[in-house]
Image (cartoon, rainbow, N blue to C red; front, side, top):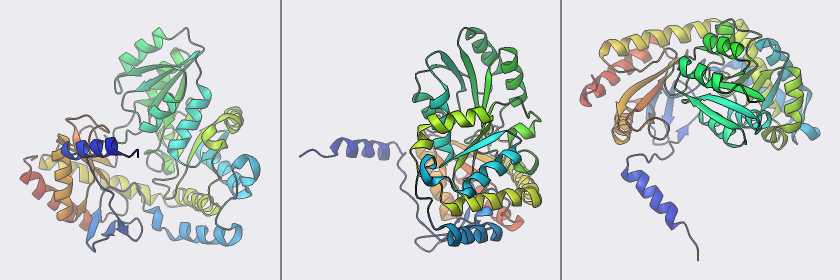
Length: 392
C-alpha cells in the first residue's frame, strides 16, 4: 500500500538541517502577553497585531452585533448570494479611506495577490518584481503565463535597465512590497513611480505591512509618500494592523469590475463572514479617530530599534516596527529563538527558504500595545541571550 515514506524522509531532512518547527499552541487570543498551552505566560513580540485592535472594544462589539443581525456566515460566494449590504459598505468605506475609485475585498491578502496578478497578466505582458517580494506575489505570478523579470532589492538602476529592455510588451507591471516583511524596510516608492511613468508602466504595491502603519491614519505607503493617483493598484490586508482577516485591492472601478469576473480566488471563495466585515468597518473608524495608536506604535518601534542597535545587535535595514535581529545559519537562529522563549520572550525564528541561508533571524514586531515596562523586559532578555550567542 502506498504511503508517505518520502514525505517522512523530507521531514527528517528538515530536522537535521535545523529548519523543523512545530506549531505553537496558545491559550486565549492575540495580545501583548500570551499564555502557552503549558501554562507559561510570555511577552508576545512576533504578532502582526500592530495596533492591538484584536482586543479593541469597538471591534468586538461590532462583530457581536453583526453576528446577531446577519448570522455567522455569508452563505455563498460573492457572485451568487454572498454580497451582503455590509460587504458593499466595507468596500465603499475602504475606497474612501484609500482615496481610490473602488476596492474589492478578498478572503486574505494572499488570495488578493493571487487573484489580481493571475487575472491581469498574460503572455503579451511582463511583470517586473523586487527580488524580496512576498511569497503571495511570487505565487500569484507563477499562476500566469506572463513574462517575468526580477530586479535586485530596491535596485533602481537595475529596475530602469529592465524597464528599458521591456518596451515591446503590451503591458509592463512593476510590483513591490510597500514594507518588506522580513527586513522591515520601506520601498523607494517615489522613485519607482517616476521610473514607471517614464517608461509607461503600471505600479502595483502590496501594503500588507504598511496598512494601518504608514501614512496618515495608516492609509499606507501611497499616502505616506503623497502619491495618490499615481499608483495603479494597492493591495492591503485586513489581517494585521486591522486586527481581523481578509485582503483587498484598491484601484479603479474598471479594474474592480474586471476582477469580479476573472479573479478565481474571489469567484470561488465564500464571502467573508458578516462579523468580519463589521469588524473591519469599525477598525477604519478607529484608525480615523484614534491616531494616538499609530503614534505610540512608531514611538515604541523607533525607541526599541535604537536600543537594540546601541546594544550591538544587527537589525539589518529595519526602518519600521518590523525589526529583525540577524543571527546567521538556520539552526542557530532557531536555537536563539528557543532560548528567548525560555526567558519569557516569543520572538519567532525565520530561516531559509524564507530568508537567505546565512541570514537566519528572529523577527521582532513592536506594537502600540507594548508598554515601556514590556520593552525594558524584552531588551534585558535579548541582551542576556545575545551575549550568550556572541551576537553582541
